[in-house]
Image (cartoon, rainbow, N blue to C red; front, side, top):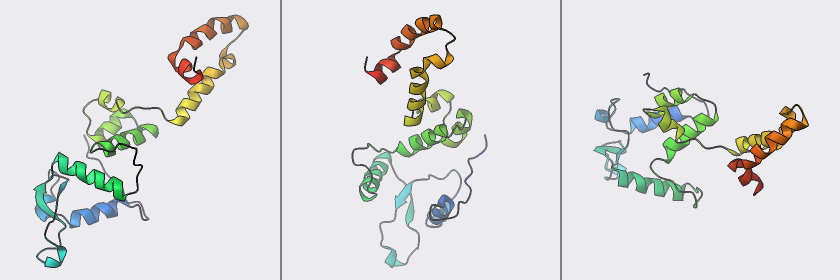
Length: 169
């Protein structure tokens, strides 16, 4: 499996520039590919001048990461009703790639999932897909050759849970 790659994208949303800054503020001993990604922030003030590093050689735990997510949600002016967890970024990544028609096997290489089933667990239909399906199912006559076909097809369509939900039957 190839390692995921990121390419530079000019502008103020340049992920590579953000990563380069993050990497430059980490202890050099924690720059190997197998080093933990999330490490503890420095507790000694930067004006101490013993180091210009923002982080120390200590992996942070799940609880600390959860607290950081809460602070990011508050300070980032994000939707207060939306539940954000440590896993939210990975979920968002997979859903965004799926929505843009990236194959599940390719997504697995980026996200680190071990099976296609795991990637499928993130699947959810967006508004555009709901609309497209509704349009297809609401216009059965486009694909029906005659009225006899329609009389057979209509009860089947109306029995589908999706249609019952869409039309509140």
